[in-house]
Image (cartoon, rainbow, N blue to C red; front, side):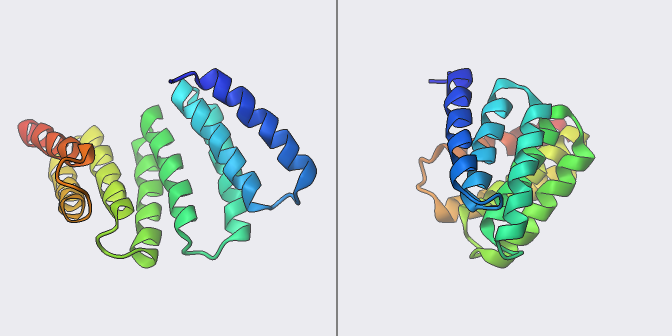
Length: 169
């Protein structure tokens, strides 16, 4: 587990095959770019992760309708990278874009909505805006409690994040 350089090697080999076999805006190329971006993200190479997440997103924008959940995932991934880089205003912008798409495309109790609320809360926490952080984290918790089993780790994680923010207030 966690051998991201090995994963990257295989993702790049697969990508070369996709590039030869598929048209330039094929959704599998977007998935491939996203996988490469994820490997770089996990390795802490955020500029490379951002580069590949953005390539993935550009293809998705051309290939998918504007409120497709996969676009929200792209915005989310880009937002996470900006958060890791400490660029909280950019992170917030992309997480809010993700949330808008998810609000239109998904049911109100979908776990991906909770993910968006959680990520926005996390960014506000990093920015020191604890009241906004708490508001978004509480929204995430409500959805997670409705949509996930009671022992799911994301419920505990969200509760821990709420406790952390409350201590900072």
